[in-house]
Image 1 (cartoon, rainbow, N blue to C red):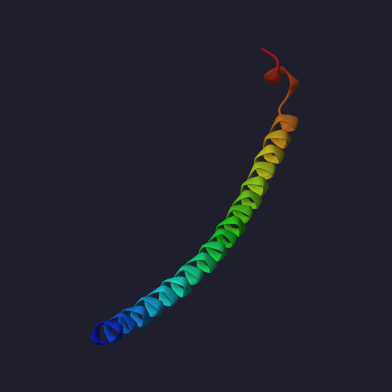
Image 2: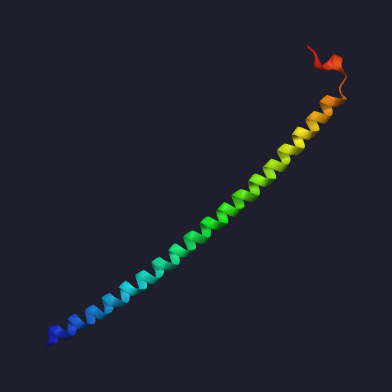
Length: 75
């Protein structure tokens, strides 16, 4: 009889631990998905800023070349 009571207590403890682990794992999975979304959004913003800077540099270079006399462009 005493063994049954001890086993019952162990079962309750194991069930509580299993439920806690499941809840923590679910929270971590949700956090991981959110983190992935944030990283993806940050990468998109970074790409847009790099594209804008590249466009500015190309435009400035074209304007500079257009202002140069033709004799300076030929080797």
